[in-house]
Length: 563
Image 1 (cartoon, rainbow, N blue to C red):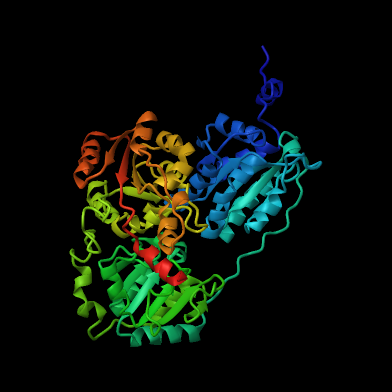
Image 2 (tube, one colour):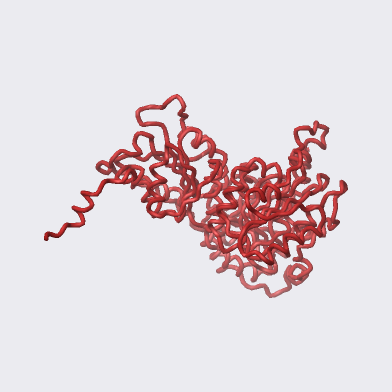
């Protein structure tokens, strides 16, 4: 009896249809570089997905292509790990265009693998996807027989280096083409270092030391640079107070943290923040929302912004210093001694008190709005104590986003996820919440949505249910497109198209297999409490009939800024 070599066995075995071709080579690198793939199958990516699912790569299917990138986006925000998404060509790609643009503006490193027109030329239904991606500021790389493996690695490397999404296209006729001799790639440019200038360090150290009420405002760049700990040390030496951007929520985890800066700042904390005479902004863009449309700090406040990215010029009065964040902060620690006199913390001890940090809505604690529907502030503040503390809070876009960041706490920055705010899109909530559920299954996923965005993204309500171990959907339902109502109806524009016939999302959820309740009084929140006490898994949908007459603070600032 003769033995048969492994090579001979493999040679004789019929080749599976998803082996030994360009799409398979791409798939194998995706499996190596990303822990999860989010997608929707079509003609342009069927071989890629088949290869990945056959080998056991974790895969979550969306029901609409916009959710594929939204899931990957949220996965990154919830974990800090790069993610991958995939759609087919043409309509599959264009359906995901909104979420791709959001990922670009929000600077989310992910790889979107798409089918594309044949290398021989476009068909009648093809569009120039590379140009479309370029219009959104996204680079497209193309996989082929001579570079499939290398170019896929390049896509992931480029996404991580630039902190941006990258599109990897597989031309339709090349997906099943056998690999050829490898073609060399151009070397990827190294990312430039921005060393701290000693003169800049001396200047900022003097300003911080001389300040009577210094405030440190950290953003996502601070997290990427691993600079939270040294900034905490710096703040403690100075007796400074802290704030963060939305994407860095609770990063400092300090009793002296005033919370999220901008339109989501609680009013009693805003009063304290505006007393700062010097603000050190680290790794935060200081866009219109973060600066409360330019009103976050008084004009006389000295603001210095440190980042290693180009200055977007959002605050013309701020002094901008381009430098790598962690080395700069460490340089400040070498120059700033511990304060020997009384500090801002000594004169404002209330900041660290439980009453100051309470989620109770001191802005407006009434149960009902003027129209007899629930006050969303009171509802969301109450949910802070009802919902499990180990949670991911995911928000869709819309007027209602003002309340969850103000009243719902999260364990760390990865727990506050708002996909859509960069591109000012609504309808991405269910998809992004599914991505958060996949990313952090040990946490309860809490999706806070409006009724307008919820209806727009309804196709992936089922995806969220399927992907979620334990979740709560809170629909703040004002039967309207609230943002338009409060920006334009108040100016006399006709509101017919701004109103929505009331939909009971709890009933929709029950039809899809969830539990749920319609909430019209604060007492009705007991339904959620009862469910949480008895269910370790599943999804509960809370449809809250909120007032059309209660306006979020960020919207008030927006309307005032626009005039």
